[in-house]
Length: 286
Image (tube, rainbow, N blue to C red):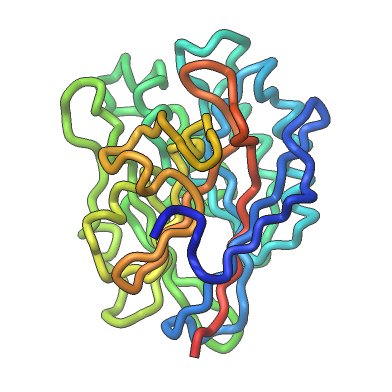
């Protein structure tokens, strides 16, 4: 099924495009699944900030935080790429500054994050320490945001619980021809068999492995291709091409939602793929 064509997808065409006022369009997906036996839950997804003025400044980020908080989501997920690509022209912000602003996000079930490939490859501390240290990881670990680096957390919702698992970046060292830092077995190690699981993974490609342990995967990374020509997305950083480029995808009874993200990489240009806040509403699908 092509991205964005899953049953129950709702797109808010009236939402404003990203602008100097720091607003992003809101893209909504509704997923009804029999494995979700808890009350309805709305999850806000913000990905791929690549904070770098004037394209996505800290002031813009603050306005986005306010916009997300006003949406009233029950859980907020940040699937990586907080810092800017080194080649992107502009005034970069430090990881501490970016995470400091995002620490003002509020949701009843909290805010959780994983690192993206640019958080590793474009982090000066990572390059200097041969990936032993990372400024984004340090900033997250010192913040109220839950950092799920190949780990899972049990969250109570209504009268029951579900699990939120997180994978580290699968392409953290791709530019060096090396394997990434993802460890699925560690991520799912504490999750009981049969429990409802949401997986947060920066790159959507993990969905293609067919791992049945999570009924829903939430990802970013692609920026929706950053160029969208009537549904043709010719520039997607994925081994699957445009298969997992954007939106709600259903395969093998599992769900994938790929956010179009906020910022830019390569060139500071988006063509018919505006920055977005992604809202996913989970419902029981009996």
